[in-house]
Amino acid sequence: MTWSFRVAAVLSGTALLLGFLWVYLFDGPEPGISVPLYLAMLVGGGWAATRWLGRPVRLNWWLLTPLASFGLMVMVRSSEMLMVLNILACLVLLLVIVADGRPVRVERWHWREWITLPLVPINLFEPLGRAIGALSQYERGGQVTVTVKRVLVGVLVAVPLLVIFGSLFATADPTFAKYAQQIFNFQADPQLMRQIVQSLVVSAIVLGTLGFMMTATSAEPGKRILARPFGDVEAIVALGLVAVLFGSFILIQVSYLFGGNQNIGAEGLTYADYARQGFFELLTVGVLTLGTLSLADRFTRQKASGHDVRFKWLGSILVVEVLAILASSFQRLWLYEEAYGYSELRLFSHAFTVLLAILFGLFVVKLWRNHEASWWLWRSFGASMVALIVMNLANPDATIARLNLDRYERTGKLDVAYLVSLSPDAVPVTAEFARGEGDVPSWVRRDLRTTAETRGFNQTRPEWQSYNLGWEEAVTAMRNLP
Image 1 (cartoon, rainbow, N blue to C red):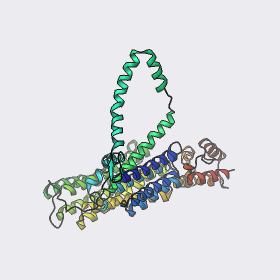
Image 2 (cartoon, rainbow, N blue to C red):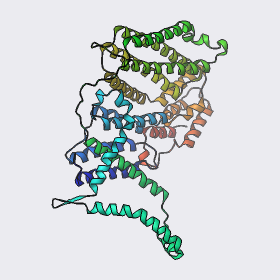
Image 3 (cartoon, rainbow, N blue to C red):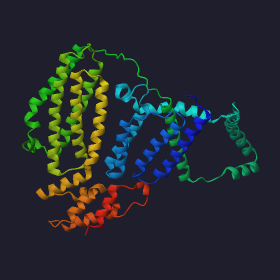
Image 4 (cartoon, rainbow, N blue to C red):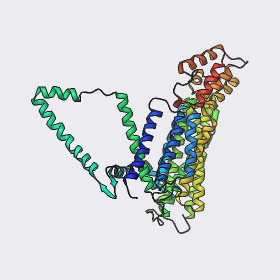
């Protein structure tokens, strides 16, 4: 692509506008409706600017759909953990959208493209420099005039010289120093300076991104020749030994792993020891095993028909063993929740365990159907996005509040301190409970009211950029609370 003055001016103007809008929407107000609004302006503005220039950037609509979903969920859900995950998902999707098509479509990405995804911003420096260079010249009568460029270069060269000689003159003459101090001694508003820096940084990122995407190519490379240093024998021996270890662990500990309540209290174990230690350690085993199988699949030599059948069987056996261990970890956490109640960390841990089991299932299909690694990676990425969408639809904090209140009705146990610490998403559920005609202690209503007033759940947010549906529903619920 030729970087003319017109191209650089249009892209720079779009980038500066988006940089200003970033400051207006996010400098001060908390995230809310501002997130989906800015994503819409970012994608729409960038596409419109490049289309006006005759080179519209390529947008993968399959990626724009979850991007819009997660952006909207920042406005709908007020759970801090869920909000962080939604914003993180938006950032990852934006990186994937930018990198898509250079030089391989995202559906064909292998490990190299996924691992180097965080390094994509490094590629923005070259188009950013070309855009700045093109801005320093303009066309007049078919002739390219570089006067502006020469003036800017002269100014840049003179600045350090002026500083050096000016300092020497100020040191040598007190009168000159007095006048220089009056000229250059100005007080800048720190907030204004921060906003200017934010605006310029965001503008530079947007400008580099648009330039990068406009020069992208969608040409598919030839079939890659991947280095595979290990043969089937080495992989089969290694996986076989790991499978024996896992099988021995399951056989020896089968009564302990699935014993449940009868193991509580044995040898001084408490629910916390049984659930916390066992759950996270067994979950770590699952994550490490998935990584080990992926590396074995990547670096083991294959025949034209795929891996050796022994490799496939050992890999499948290892997956079955890990699924049994994950089932144990799932049960441990369930026992802990039954004893102490439900929380965000425990609910998200449950969801991650289910997601991990799905990824193992996809790997087995990939192994036996002889798909490339890109088949499994792309579907694993999609499964992760779907899992986060399901969590958003489930409304975790409201679900946690509902489960804890159901547990209170069964056992009479309720951690009110944790209940009132949940995000505004849980307030409609707790307020409905407090308004109920059942045996609701008066101190529960008092704590709910006090917490709502302390955390501001009983009043609308002052900035429109922070509008959040969960917060507004909490305000309505608290107004109706006696």
